[in-house]
Image (tube, rainbow, N blue to C red; front, top):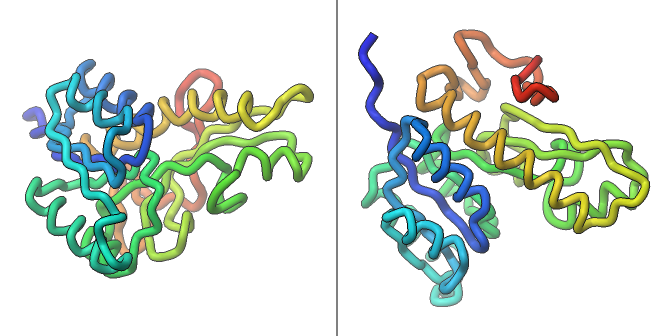
Amino acid sequence: MTKPDKLPLVVLISGSGSNLQAIIDQAAAGLAVEIRAVVSNRPGVRGLERAEAAGIATRVLDHKAFPDRESYDLALADLLDEFQPQLVILAGFMRILSPLFIQRFRGRMLNIHPSLLPKYRGLHTHQRALDAGDSEHGASVHYVTEELDGGPLILQARVAIEPEDNAVRLAERVLAKEHIIFPMVIRWIAEGRLTLTEGRVIKDGKALEKPLYLTDTGAPEP
């Protein structure tokens, strides 16, 4: 079997870019992707420095320079098209995307969210899990649809909530899991093992009836 070409990506960020760094590190270790650009809606963030240090093209498209969400999203979509990505990665991109943008990249856009979806869509997920008295929390990788944090789930990682946890401690442990599961899903797509077909996640030729979970050994399980 011939080695597949590298999957072209564009990564969208708004902040420190730690998930971006996890993808950069995996790419350096052999993950068959080409990060063609990193785009931020905020200037001067740490994630742009990470990309530049790795020799990746960076762009800033400041949402504050646009009168409304739709005009920003149109400009953002046009910018992404310049790089012709086969996959768009939302790695801490703190913007709600408009339906027109999502439709343009349907089936080729991934997000990572710090909760065990469908629990705790939106913001402040760690504190919400603590306030609810949950015994576990975690992170989810999913395809992006018009429903906020509601697209088809692919892979989740669980984190036990400890008695002494606060939102900061819990967030740190969840983030460590994010750095594992996001590159893992990207690898499956790069290897042609994962697709979104007619709204269903197909992995290794089979439709997922529920998300996969990361085990303690680092391997996914149904």
